[in-house]
Image 1: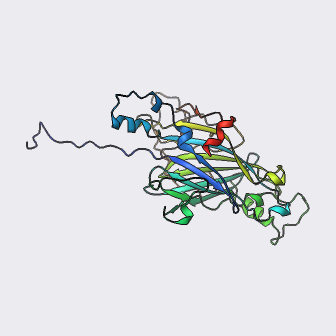
Image 2: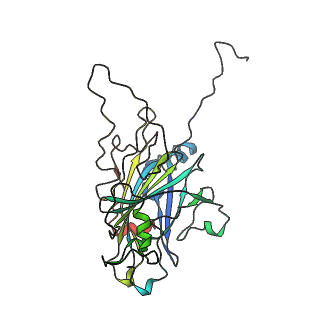
Image 3: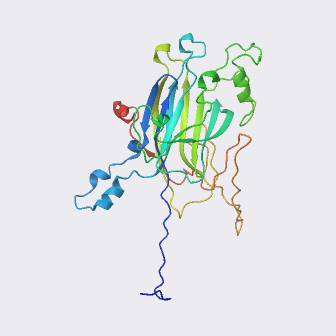
Length: 325
């Protein structure tokens, strides 16, 4: 039947499903550490409640992991810089797999923290690998070939051993010493410059894919463990956050990530309150920009956790936690 004004064919436009972080793997130069299956962590018991009369398509949709933004807290045990038996250890490498290929860009923002002071901010692109490449074999487990696999860029995480300066405060700032690495980090700060010999205790990473923050990973650096117990990785915290619906999505700035306070974005009170007047001023959102001074970057569809309560994952302190690695 030909199209008429009364029966005009209007194709339905569907937005692509949100991307998600499927898993993350960490290893050192000498051995694999762990593979965290985030899809298993975020999966719910909805599939168990499916009735036998459900159609195959509905069952497939129910079995598909829901898209969540996730927050991971990892405890990294590193050898101290003066331990001669761990000279081969430099830091931790990471590889992630995503549910979908990215359309425009995939970046990782890494910040090193000395207390509440950000001592460095690095921005790097994710390096996508061909699943057929030997480097694409994820240490500790297998990843479906349909999922994009990418290395996280070189950052403070890959050289976290050298983020601990000498304990001697009188040591000169010699370019030939290992402390020069700390000097290069403190020259580009996110806030006020910390003391030169400040120890970095935490590292935070934001994985931003197509201008959406998919994951926040907070690392705690522990250099007090015995030499026989390092290096190791322990998952100590996991939280998932549901995506906002399209009607509630607002262009909000990504709040600062600080590892020394609760959850992902403490101190963030939600969207700014409009000025008290009869007609609130409507201001367009600031244009997106890539950070060049270490400040927090602006995302048109930023990670707003103030509108959706955090959904806690499994008890990460239980003995059953090892099945997710």
